[in-house]
Length: 415
Ligand code: ATP
Ligand code: MG
Image (cartoon, rainbow, N blue to C red; front, top):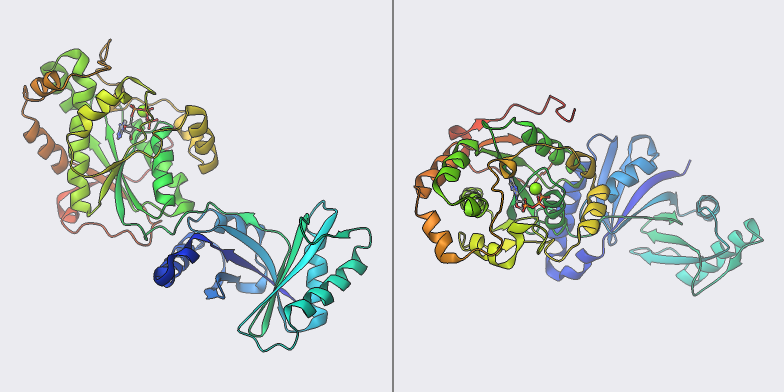
């Protein structure tokens, strides 16, 4: 019986010239991790595609869907794998077209690669097209804009036949663009920002600042849920949590009310940059969107940004909230982010935060407490929880002994 397999298409990788095999190997490694709950037999490169086969030979739409969520995948086709046997691949083409849903026109597109099969693409188009015309007499053949294209791909001694594909998330395989530290809250924006940078191939290491011990640890568990929701994308190896509550209280006593948020943010950026250095990450990422809230004016962004020398990526800077929410739904973090949880941002909030910070006032506030000691102490007391989703993530050695590990997220604190 003809097997069903998944054919993975990737176009951006094709643009990478000499690096192409590095990208393909990374995508294969990432797929292996992402599909570990499926009975996968083999994942291998064939002729500009990646082929995924399963034990028993019956790849399913669920497998295709899981593949589609891995960065670097442009689309996935649930294909029939046939021998070089006319009857077999023509029958597969009939089945594939029969499964294509509603359509009124089609065409056949044959391709060949590394094969000495006697039939060439024109012969194949004619042969399979003839069989399909007989099987679907009320459908039209349309060469230019058909509703469905039946692809018949001959590679060595095998023929792959498919008529439909599921779009993938696109982007590049995680692990091909280095490492970033992302500032993660349990709100809508930063999970989306994290996902966007991860989709471009970066390994993401989120850092969450919680209000503990002045608030409950709910936001920490929500962040763990967010990391788990991003599991299909395989971009996260570890989540850092910085209990910031005590230090926020100190800041709130030391600096003018209107500058509290900017001062918290400066500390958060400085701590994140130190963690990024320990991790070997090359940039920070935030979910900021210009003008969305008081802290996201250009003046305030500048007053916080000057704390760090690393590039700060803000993938959502030009996005509207509606777009961000839509993306949050797509990536599966929306429901988690609707849950309210106090974090460091809701703690000791001023009644009227500064919207256009003056740098001299920010600097005076900054110098009114021992910020160096605070930053070092926060880095020293960082906690983390590891996730087994990103095959390219390597933890920094120096962290292993010095830092506590958070309890795994067993508690459902969404209620
Ligand atoms: P989000 O929806 O991501 O919470 P926001 O709309 O609430 O963003 P801000 O509170 O101004 O906006 O946060 C801006 C960015 O600062 C966030 O997107 C995130 O990158 C970072 N940030 C905010 N709070 C935290 C936190 N508790 N821990 C880590 N990073 C945070
Ligand atoms: Mg927030």
